[in-house]
Amino acid sequence: MVFLVVGRLVRVDVGGVILRYYVFGSSSPQILITAGIHGGEATGVYAARRLVEYLGRVESIEGSIVVVPVVNVLGFYARTRWCPLDMVDMNRVFPDGAGSVVTRSIVKKIWELASSSDYVLDLHCAGLDSYQYILSLYREFPRVREFVEDIAWDTVVESTGLRGQLFVEANHQGIPAAIIETGGGSGYYVEEWGEKLFETVSSTLVNLGFINGEEKKISKKYYGRLVGVQSSYEGFFKPSIRPGVDVVVGDVLGLVDGKPVESSTSGRLISLSSWMYIYSGGLVGRVAPRS
Image (cartoon, rainbow, N blue to C red; front, top):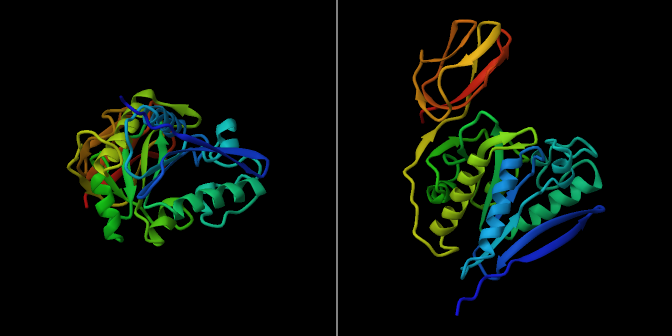
């Protein structure tokens, strides 16, 4: 007979708004997986919902998996990065919160869950024209690099370490944590990236020993902090390549009214604008430099 793990749905009143999260398993270690801290980043929410559905069908779990599919509840409804009650970016005010009672209550609840976890994985979107990557402080924290080695994706980008972010504050508390950025944003989800993100997270849970399955160890490429690529021209931008490829200085990324826009950095092209009008000095993409 097969016994399936049934997730426990928890509802918490946070200043008159209901925050929902799911708990699978009941022992340690524990991993916290969050999505929708920025309300407009729907692909992460898509992947988190797929994960909840999947975990409800697994036969056994070692430890506990806590999934919060939508952290910024009102921001998700409004399809905006911020909480619309106070325009506070929740991922800049951990661990204490700021702004309205709703924002403060959500931040404090998520921090409570993070503080009792052994790992934290936060799902985000880097834009509709972005390649998926892991964002982490892998140089600063050796345990973070160990954690990242178990995340089932190849591209790792160094974070600036800006304080107030959930994963940064968790790192400073000795909890290995990272972000996975994927394609999507502005209230839109990208199904292809949502499925890849779900597969990345579910395989990571296997690699960490939370669920059974065949391990999917991915060889990593480590990169430095993102560098913006600007256009020297004004006009309509036509991309020549797609994000996710490695480029060198001088590679043509696209054309502005026939004039080339070249990469000023060697590394992995993380994002590149779609067909749009660009002003001189405007940002057309981002490259993660070789580490």
